[in-house]
Image (cartoon, rainbow, N blue to C red; front, side, top):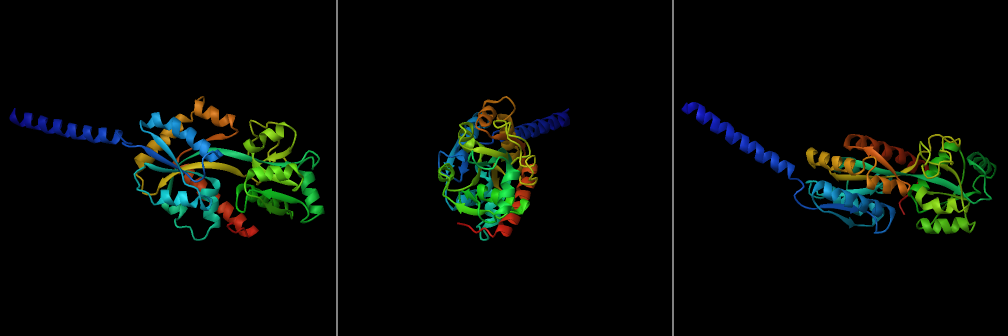
Length: 325
C-alpha cells in the first residue's frame, strides 16, 4: 500500500509538472508583439500591417504594436528584425522590395534574408496593372508592336530603380524582346502626374493606386500582372491572356521573424494570421475592398516562395543591370 501511495504521489507530481509546463507554453505570448514596417506611416504596407495588428491582438491575447522604421529601401527595418531576440515578439511586415528585391539587388546587406530570417506567412498580394492614356495603344499586342517599330522611343515610368514598377517593365521587355526607355520618378504620385500630362507613355503600378483613374477613364488598363484577373478589374485580361506569359509581378507582404525563433511560436503566429484572414472575416473583407488578395501561405510555403522570388528578381536585376538608387 505504501509503495502504491508513493507511486501515486510521484505520478501526481509529474502530472502537475507537465501541467505547469503546458500552461507556460500556452501562455505565450506573454508580452506585446512588435510588428516592424519598413516604410513610413500611411502607405499601403503600413495600412495592411495595422489591419493585421488590430485583428491579431485579441487572437494572441497581447497588444500588437506597429513600429515604422523606414530607410534604405526597407533594409534598415528588416535588419533590425534579423538581429532581434528570437523569441517571436519582433516580427517584420515586409514587402516584395524590402524582402526579395533588396536581397537580389544589394550585394552588401548586413543580413542574409534566407539565412537570418524565417517566414511566418505571406499575408496579401497585389497585382500591378499596365496602363496607358486613353489615346494610347488599344491592347498589349499593339503596344509591343509600337515598341518594336521604334526601339527606345517609347518610355515607361517607375517609382525608382529596383521598385516593383521598374522590375515589371524590365521583365516585360525581357519576355517580349522590346526596347523601352526607363524614366524614374520618386513615388507613385509623380508617376501618375507624368502619365496624365503625357510625359511618358506607360507605367506599371499597383491596381489599388490606379483604380480610381481607370474607373474615371483617365487611363486604359492593358493587362494585370497576375495569374488570375483582378476582382476589381474583371474586364482587364491577365498579362498571359494579353499575350505575354511569364510576366507575373505581384506586390506581396510577408511576416518574418529571426531565424532562431522556436517553431512553436512561429506556428502560433501563423495560426493567428490564418484565423484573422479566414474567408468571411472582417479583415479579409477590408483587404479585398482595397484590391488586395489574401494569400493563405504558411511558413514552409512562404519560405519556398520567397526563395523563388529572390532568384527570379536576381535574374531581372542582372539582365537589366539595375543598381540601387
